[in-house]
Image (tube, rainbow, N blue to C red; front, side, top):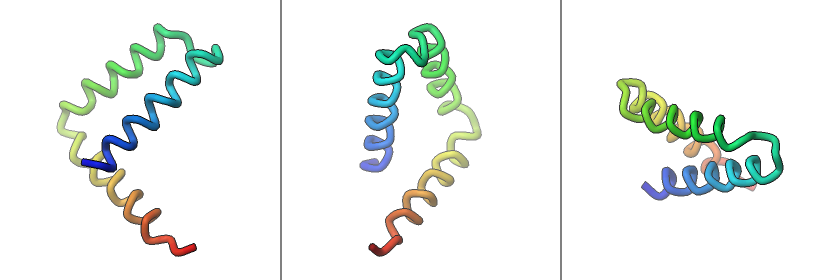
Length: 64
């Protein structure tokens, strides 16, 4: 749950920065957000979550 919230917060910040800088308009941003919202309710959601969890685990396993 903590990883999901962090990713959502990071993506929200990126989206706000892109809208404010003019690299993406508000309309396409809303469409992209709605696409993500509806994609989360499909059968692909568990596969996407597993993929993101594996990436997070890989990053966490890196020793500096």
